[in-house]
Image (tube, rainbow, N blue to C red):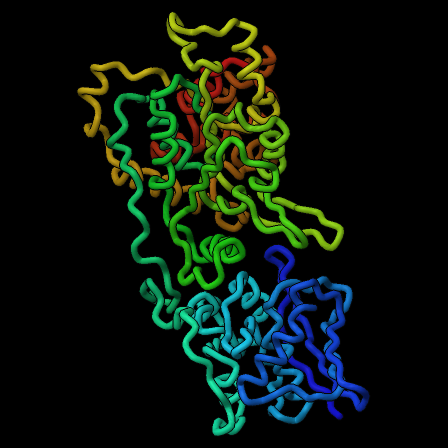
Length: 523
């Protein structure tokens, strides 16, 4: 009888591919077939879609209906294709005018209501990149879809509204009763000067002024925030390791547009459908429990894997408290994303790639009982047990951590005199922002954001400090106490120290301080 085509998007990780949803109506016995590598959710959609169309006043053709999802070799998963399939079937039957290059992204309920789906932001981004500007989504996904520049988003509450907007006579259409899904109207935030909605009221971060004592810890936190460096803290229970880690996100500057879009896209795949309504401007903070599995930390799940904690911490902070208690294989798997800033998860059906350029913060006790260090009078662990406990953090992993500090117990004098008296988060954040601005200016045109991303070609080339400044590094390498990777990371920290002080190039004191923050924790 007829043939028609609509468009949808298939997501593999954050990568979206355009899918042609083709519908053909034949003259044989009634049937409804979906081909093109659909998953179980799509195969089960047939009766749901027939009911949705019938309850909206436009039943699907009783003839043989064949729907092909092209390209046929690309796996199609989830209910995101529901609306596109129904629209192509109704167009093939001649009940709906052709919609051209319009992309349809929504799930359908039995009553014809449009339901929100996960991953709308990366799906709309893929559609716009492919030249499809008109996007039809459910009302609950409207705010999220509208975050993509260049997208002309049309949001509806039910199939009947979509059909009426395409020119179908509304007299015969039926709208379902409200199902309790949000209207997706006004966003929680306000629109910026470019019209992009942002989160206006992020949760207040804990203040650095609450930390008593810990002068080294506060300085290391400032350096880490200014240069994007990884941090390891070793100290007994109650010394303030967790307090310091939780205050790192408050020192970081707001995310720029492209970084905020990346972060929001990752969380769009993870959060409940319809929950992303504004760009995430504040750097995320993820603190998984030490019982977390590899899939929980790096991503996993049936079919196309979802992002794990490491990807959700992209452009933010990944905090692993009690780091030696994590499974050895889990924590050693951090080496690759620490180097290249991404996670590749291979499955038989496809490979998903997620961004994972985070700041790693590790916190650990010096031994199982936690009382080793200082006089260690109360420690009940043998020397062998102490070495074995800290040895769970492998040398290659620690070599990738720029700042390694000891966090001693706080004395009563420090607690009484220091709590609430130190510099606040806002005061330190000003210096961090100034240092980040200096890095932005220096790295402009190189595709880099922070000193933590500097490579060896730059550190030994255009950004190499004078020979007298790097002399301590040469001696440390000759003694074998510093690896080639460690040499680069000390130089990165030295550049950050110079930026914090407003210097154009590191001096000897900067290199000495950077070496100090790698020598407090014995190998």
